[in-house]
Length: 77
Image (cartoon, rainbow, N blue to C red; front, side, top):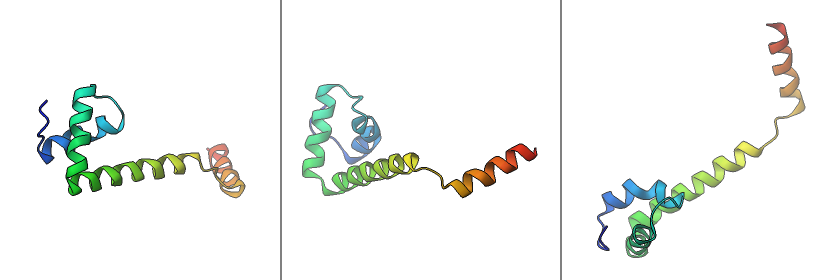
């Protein structure tokens, strides 16, 4: 992959980049592009924040009242 990436190429590889699934050369090329392209940098930051938010949401414990209601529904059927 060349150092001069187009935005489309960066967006296409962005999730793999965030997951650290790219080889070092490709990762470096994406990082270089995002350091000079505000649009791609903004997209990457949005994806990072979205992933963090989803991760936090998955760790939240359901309130006891909801657990009781769900348990009652499941036990009813």
